[in-house]
Image (cartoon, rainbow, N blue to C red):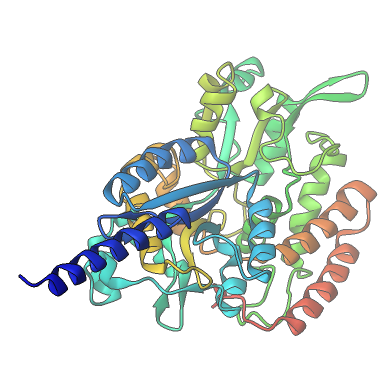
Amino acid sequence: MSTQHNFKVKLILSLTVIMFVICFLGGNVWVQGKETITLRYWRHQHKPAVELEQPLIKKFEEQYPNIKVEMFVATSTPDLHEKVLVAFAGGGGPDLFNMEGGKFSQYVSYGLMVPIELDVFGARTYQELMEKLATDVAAGLSGWKHEDKYYGLTTEVSCYATAINTEHFKEAGLDSDKDYPITWEKLAEIGQKLVRVERGEIIREAYALTTYPVTFTLVFEGMLRQLGGDVVSPDGKESIINSEAGVKALQTLYDFMYEYKITAVPSQLNLQGPGFETGATSIVTDVGPWYEAYLKDNAPGIYPYLQFKPFPRFEKGKDIGIPNYGYALQVSSNSKYKRESWELAKILVSTAGERKKIGLFVPDEWPWPKEISTGGLGIIPKEINDIVFEAATKTLMDKVNPREALNAAKKKIDKYLAELPYKIYGYK
């Protein structure tokens, strides 16, 4: 072998070592021929779900040693939504995020996420994808469909029902298996036996209203649909919230406070299942199957008395439950690592059975199957949630006539819809 050839070999080896050192010092570590990358995964706080996903992320990192996952947990869904939009506006944000369905129309219309990469799942068509996914995951994909493409992998599909405290029922001489509020009219009747009053003040509510705009809208929307109404028209072009259905629904809630006096005037905002976990409320209608795991962890003294019943109906209304809601994993259009993000999403939805155990998918036991099959899809943007809640607050706290409050709400919603650069999907 010539001296010149030996020199070339040594030079190549030396340059290779130098380049490796430069890359290492520059922060780019190579593992098995691949650059180490960081995937940013954002989701909202829900302790059972976070604890379920953490070992899955560790498993993913072991499977792909060149990938590090940074998991950020926002305090709530609204908090996550706000942070995602701010980050996107700056050209950054997460690679993968778990977002609630009410934001889908806005996100997909603004091009904030990308369609599912089928080959990551070994599928050639969306039909093949559904066949490969767990039933609960596949069943929820329609909520993230836009122009024949799917943009989200379902992590939660659920609905609300009625949660009752059986101990309170027993104390009031009621049978929780027979006397539960199957109708709103029944709720007014038994509520007067459950409520506790001292010196003219309610110290234990029979029925408490959520003060969280998004959950209030779901409850109110369920009442409207039972009466043949809705918040927005089927074509998504105008609000019909001020229909006779809307007026009756809001009057019903008003009567709970001021005629039957089974509900206290709310004193704090952004509460879901208000007072139930402390024993200060006997009935709530704004929690889903996930609430069981939550209550077990946070209120072990109340948990044994939790029992789920169907969402109340109106005696002369439709036999349907509350609108469904869901969350899905979506990959950002800003991400440099879209395929890797879908690989992570694939692992995160691989344990649908475990998600079902903690209430992220509805159980097979009564009353859940009928509730989720009759409720329909509920997709209302935050801005409309806020308008609906504002109207209800005017009636329930300021005693404004329901029709007057809802007429004002309709005008605001119509103005919002007219200026909206996208259609609210989910209304057919």
